[in-house]
Length: 613
Image 1: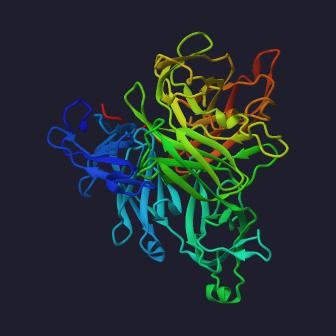
Image 2: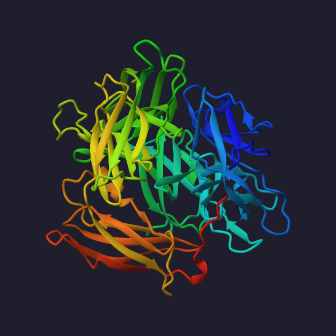
């Protein structure tokens, strides 16, 4: 059951409840779908959900019809999770306003959909329906960032852009989607001589990176002759990649995974018919790896099958080099059958594979989500049957994080990831013959409350590690849960003392830039620091206050640091103060106070977003 209330706890009459998750009302488990329901006069609604599966829940009040002035409505904080068999309370937290958006060029792509991701106090994702002229009304919270995605199909993005903040009444934001162009591709396997065309191979075009994840566009599937009449999007990579440089990835049942890039002339359409007739396409994707099949069965216990469960399979990118693999960020999504069995086709030989099962979790604050439990981590050489994989029971894990002065570390981040992926997974095989290490991501991020505490439920195994991070100070420790008899494990973490760099972020006129993001990146990272922790530090930032003042911690005494600032206005800019040398003997920073300048115009400095009182 779901109940929606306003800021005073009264039934929120007129709200619309949105649930986002997989396999809602029989939808395919491989993609995310949304469902909207209307509560009764008491603010209650009953929704049928799949057992043990978590769904993001948020609510909004439909905007009134367009008229004079800027209308407002209410929206909820979207950080709420609903699990079948529980009651979720959704509370209105913010006021929303309308942004008028016009998307041009959709007709060249057929009938694509438009999806909007909002991040901030009311983070959520919603699908909007443009009118005949490509326009729609976008409700969002002032001050929150919005990104608009144009998709040919769910997960296949042809264009994405950030929606700027509303600056004046009645303003319209215009998005122009470039038309596609023809680009013949052929998929070949070079395992045979001469190379053999491979059909039924899916090919994606890399569109860009959004919030640390790669955005892809599915450009086609090859036929029996290996040909694809690809329709590519005209894109320009942010971050320095040359214009016209396209990265492709491909995978098929009999085609080993391959990822490569090439220069593409975006202003030139190609004659696909002539290329097909001459069997000489503009570009060829070649795989020199065998395609292998992995199968197995997942059990709830020693006898009960985990039927119709959603599994995430993370394969490594390419082959192992030296003694390490790097796992792909995007998983292969599969579903077990009624016997709990699964099958994965088209994996590249000599690669690492991590198979995970989703488990619904709820933390102490009443919110939750899903934790992907590690059920298998293997190096794939040939077709493999992993046999029965048994899921572990869940244990309560309570984190108590303290600062170096002994006080609770409020708003510290606790990253939880799988520890087994960082250990020897070869069973004693010579490291010169097979890689022994896998670099992985941290799938769970928690934040401590004012008492420095955070809680989560994890499978009872020793396959997890936790990293606590606050203002540069960090501690990493394995979580030993397999042999614990008690249901709750308390993990006490004491953060070390770090040097603190203080400063101010301003524009060229000397005006402070509030809520700027400031990063202090060690260069180089000291030897002996695990790459996964170094990646966390590289993505960690501190937020400046309303006067542009900031404090960042410097965890390594003998390192040099690059200090960066970013401000999200109508334009986004980076700046650097160069290297800041930390002297270990003096335990000081020279200079102790710095100023970072970003070329932002005075008119672009946004005001603090309003909240419901």
